Length: 271
Ligand code: SF4
Image 1: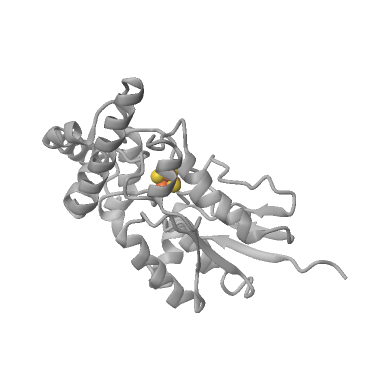
Image 2: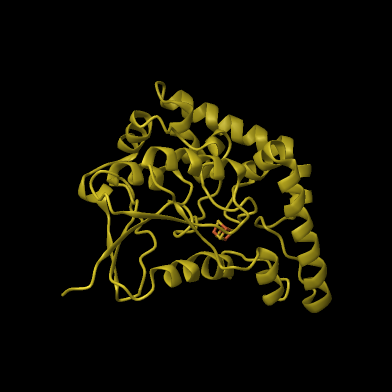
């Protein structure tokens, strides 16, 4: 008798994976939904998961490493994760996911849209195969928005100021998104500042280097330039809205933010 195949779909807290979960609900009723929880996600993300669970009619499994971010930070001797050393994704998302799937054959459904060139996270484990239903059905950004609207789920709440899901301190945030964090969640911004100061202090003691979440400057310096960053962001947004006259703000926000910083986000954390 062949092994039972599991069907799994990762929810990142972003719009695309939420839309895929909705799209697949009735197509694969035995689907298992999961969310890799670092414990440092935005409050809006947890609210969005609850909303989604209500639509799906089943819980989204919360996977974690069993250890806090602070534990891993100690393991990595106080070095904050960065695009070059992304231990957070590896230890707090991918390893718990691969442990949860185990050795059973599984099909993983990944929310890459038809209009996206990127590939997304594809597991290298031989028992996991990957499918891209949006690519197969030619569903693009417009299609995703339609799926979310029709289901009454809508976009995640953080979309008013940030377009990528993930940890509140994620180093893939654009400068204006850091400013958004300081305004929407000042207590989380303050915690990010404290991590940075501690890491900088420890790193300075060890190697004379200063660590920062955001490229080229500490959060304290970044926030001193708040007016300048916001003015540039608003100008780019207005210009883009003007170019695309009938476009909604949500349609241009991602493009404008990408122009401000085109660093690719984490493929495993932002779908
Ligand atoms: S969202 Fe950012 S900080 Fe969080 S695990 Fe992913 S890459 Fe790391």
